[in-house]
Length: 162
Image 1 (cartoon, rainbow, N blue to C red):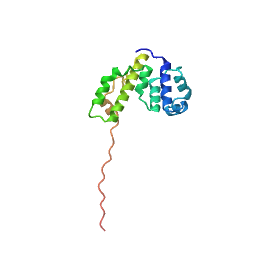
Image 2: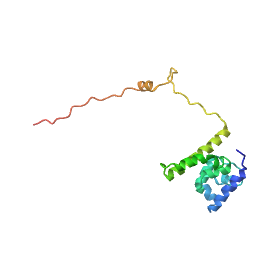
Image 3: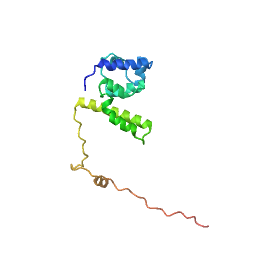
Image 4: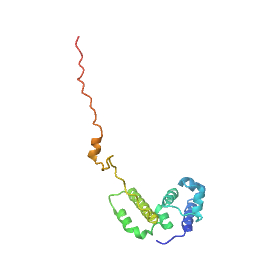
């Protein structure tokens, strides 16, 4: 992926904000991002994360994918065209489901790009072990629990005839 100038995404966000007739302060409130940080993004001083772009997209009521492409986090739509075509062609999904699925796909793609740049290995999940150091199985866990106690059934009350 080519490096995109930070000011480009800022200019794009400013254009979208102005076309939506939102003040910087109002966009900051609706997106949950501080006014100074949003101003720095628009002026090209800060590069927003995928999560921040998603919040901005939601407040501007535009696709997060558009912002990801502008920020250089996603390649242009040509690379994801096959996935989009398959989702849109699926007769079982509703229009809302298709839109949500494509938004999720775009956010996963953006996370993958961000994750690649971090290049930190994920920590391996730890196994739960018993005090002796052997892994616990479901049967061992069940046998370690105390057996449930049951109350003896009472005989039904009968009314004594007088």
